Length: 336
Image 1 (cartoon, one colour):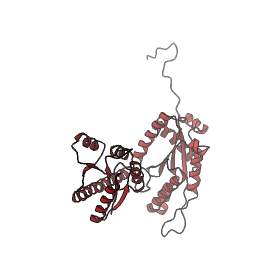
Image 2 (cartoon, helix red, strand yellow; image 1 turned 60 degrees about the vertical axis):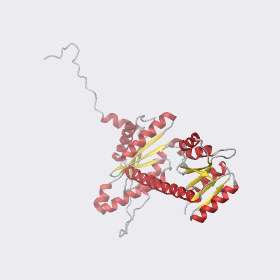
Image 3 (tube, one colour; image 1 turned 135 degrees about the horizontal axis):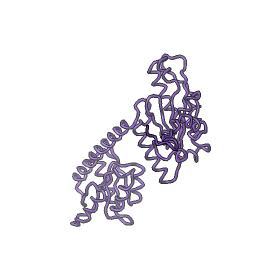
Image 4 (cartoon, one colour; image 1 turned 90 degrees about the vertical axis):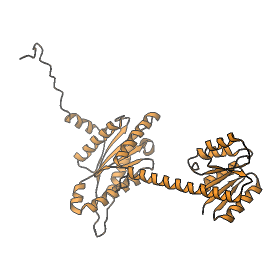
């Protein structure tokens, strides 16, 4: 059973169409006598089809149809215009141009009404199924199947887009790179099924620890990433506070499996880099967070290190070989 919305300022037309549709089909009929009421009911009930009178006071059918098609939540609802018989081809063309599915000419033959209505319903169902299939394909292409986090390819695309948005609107963002400590030992000791449980639990903790607007990704193996949008405004102390919250939550989360009496606990190391303080390009932001993560793991694991940390800067200087001046000493030609 589908919901059909009929919109007409003539109460006799509303009553007649309602009786015909309910008698000849099993569909539920909603009635509206104005454009504003049509829009309100469309948002509330998401009808499968709208039968919309062209000539109404205040807002004609063309205006209402344009508003329906401009709204993301109602643009897919098929609109069948109701109009008195006329030869105004330009009006018909306008209706099709703004998104109408079909025209029904008054007085409406009952059999034609039902036939065109059912055709619109079949088309709506087919389009809904196609959109659902495309959405599922998109989800599969961008999601890590084990953890439900977005995959590395989609993460890199999102980071690129968020950096561009941050530059355009003068906003901040932070990148967290997260490694599960001693993950190989978990796999070696308890087996890969337990390792999979650990990764799923870490992903769940990440999602529970950040806002819905933030981005959680699995970059491969035991490495995750989180893009925090404007963390400084939301968290007071910013990205470091969010990273510490994640670290503590993972540390406190036991992982159980069937037949495993003792919980397995893991910890994570986190490297933090922020835009624009640490880098302005996505690749450089990843490099900065990766350096901080390396420092966290090198210095004991189960800790958060920021790219702006003096220790990271000092270690980077120590690991950078000095430049060799290959110019010959003063007074020498350099030729042997």
